[in-house]
Length: 260
Image 1 (cartoon, helix red, strand yellow):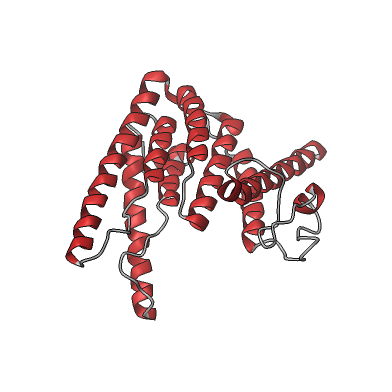
Image 2: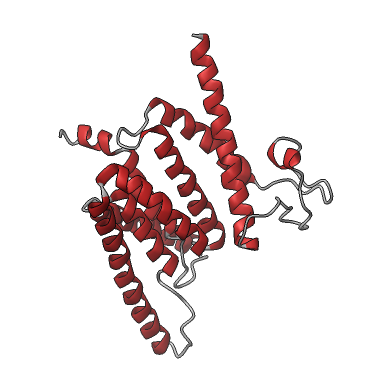
């Protein structure tokens, strides 16, 4: 029993520190494009590691507290750590799954806050995707999944470009809106590496369906509140992540649910 509690404590610590890592990368990378010392997003003052990680978790110069996102990410990763410890993915194990979850966390936070999937994050994802994909599926299915994921989303990217340019021309405006960012194309290739062929197909389909459903309800709510603006862009990365998460971490539950 004592050993179990010690393990639980260590897992909680791992989840907390992983949340700190996701927050750090999400704070630093969009502004600096490289790894630097943590800094205050309000005044730019460098932060001590003790203050940034443990206490008081606010800027000692301007006293600005950390954003609510910091605490949400910390608690989410503590919960994910406990859940992953109790239900590790059978094909990649706890540590492989944990590496994927940290990557997913960085992508989701940055894309929600900045509408951006950065090239350094995509390149890091290629490394993670190859590692996870080869462990799960071998080289051939991994590379084919990556190519199909990238290629299908590339086609959707250019289809969106053609549609947006046509709409802009009809309105007599310079095209300045995008239906889909190229970072989403890169992310789809990364997720294709992780899922492999042919699982990338239902992964993308689920992402598109879920994204469409959320977009529908978002538009509906904004119309009711009279705040809707035409062609308002929603970050698409989180939907792609959800599609991959379901098949990477919940695949066994889906098989049981559907009776396979």
